[in-house]
Length: 284
Image (cartoon, rainbow, N blue to C red):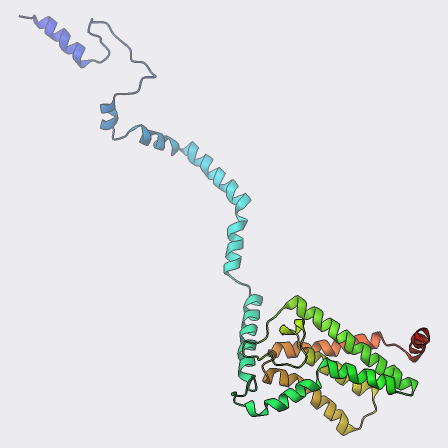
């Protein structure tokens, strides 16, 4: 039967983890991980311990500084995205103007085809369209230049011919750059079209009508009824482009302004009769 002293020493050795079975004290290694049952008793595992360590104030301060540096260097991209999602007042105004232009142009295209509300006057509108075409004006100016006997008449016709060529070049350049399609309700049955004529902005008929109208009023001696007739013709040429569905309203409006300014350029590049005689002498 074991003695009480031995039982007491055995109980002490079993209750104190630092005493070995031989009665000597043993020290646990600092590098040794605690037993699993102690970790479970504390309600954590190695992974959660590492997560808690990562959530220390030092770590949080470090992550806050890294986030601040990231936002300071790359924070412009979200702002740019917000700017794209929130258009400016100018963008909204331009979009509204474009929508109004398309709606009004479609409403005014009453002669776009024979089945339209004003389809019966479509032949008359096409006749006005031909009167503002570039080919009849070029042929007419060249013929008047050839048949003119006076130096003053030749000077006027030569500058008119130069103005018509300049108008074709400038309108072709602007159409090739902008590349705006013609209205969807337009029928491509125009007289003598070219590749650039599939574009709509600006209206070449409107630029030509405005420029030639100013030219005729400035350099031809016309009575008052004829001057009114010239202004009425230029207005009808531009208005017929919208009625036929060839152009939008803004195409014609910009064309009138462009043609008005083109005349100022023609006046700046005006060729006198002396220059004309020098050119004729070189070709003679």
